[in-house]
Length: 149
Image (cartoon, rainbow, N blue to C red; front, side, top):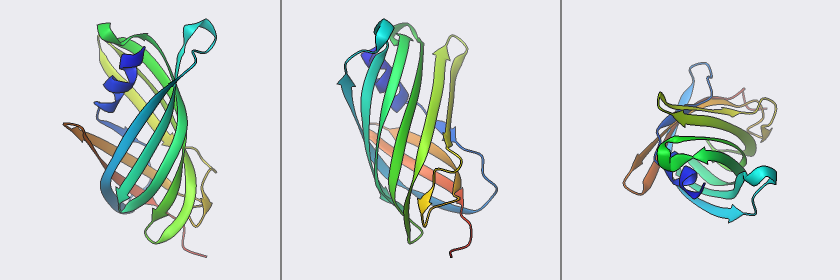
């Protein structure tokens, strides 16, 4: 179960599906901390991320996983709350993750939860591409925001 987090941190995936808008990029770090297993032996981890670049901020959340990642078959779900500043606007939004990996490859889906944006990030929609090179994590966020109030 512990390997699922390492595997997912090595994946490249896209989040969301907004209309064309602005683009932000930068780096982030990820820390996974094991939590007690959920009923049935489902692994749980606390997520902590730090974003730098065009999106500056932090996120915290929880990830649950099951399967046998050593054999390349597993699944995960996660929810995290991102708090930060993007394009000079400060607020927060929730990201909802789900993914599987099997002999057919990986299928990952991460979306900004509709209605979760707060502060000056209320109404945000976004698509994020994550790239990992060595131990460094990079993001590109294609996003749309309503006009500032």
